[in-house]
Image (cartoon, rainbow over all chains, first blue to last red; front, side, top):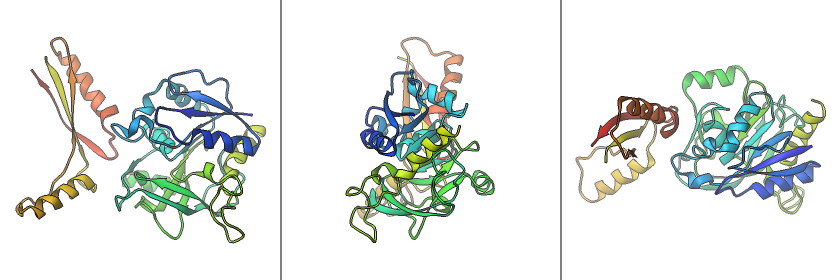
Length: 231
Length: 82
């Protein structure tokens, strides 16, 4: 299974995302922002970073890139797409997911191992989790405060589209503790925390068992491979 | 050269961290009567020819679709400046 990982100018976590795909058993394919050829990939990851220096608004210019025109078209046809951090911002700016992301309430960049609850497992990227499973993966952002209109928020809650919620602490002032969302179809998922940084013992968050042994992020990538095999 | 000015402001009910920081600095320097500061964006679209009504209409659309995000911002002004 070929999973495309997009690199925009200013993307940081593309190599980590590609590594996570390989560790989960998939083949990672690099996709370039200026290239509208998706190279027949079976799914796409929009990784974290600061695409176009966060000019205009985080993710706004990346959303206009040639590669995104194709990704938006294919996502609307069911192609699994995962947006991580800046990638989540790109999904929101592309209108593949609703709402917006604004500067953290406390106005500081935050970097911590963050506990989340997986509240929806009927998606291409979460099907290997148990419902309401609590996971810990790194969070690192300056503009991660999720907002939406009152009506939109009610719809997201009502339709069960909120996929990840912050547990114990709301690190950035996100409405309703929202850490990540899915679309109606379940093929598009976006979240602020970084699953690709918790995929390999020795490099993940600390757990009760051992330092840096957390690999909760790996199931995101195993989920999409599972979804593709069963598609 | 003629240009179209698009002005974008953060929504009134959203916290504007830049504006708040500037307001605090102004208060420290004695400007006690300034009750609040809000900071938005002025975007200039330059043209090498006359600006038409169609350009203005296109600029309004660009303002709504790309230069602002309706969830967090409002386009408050789109105007031609010669």
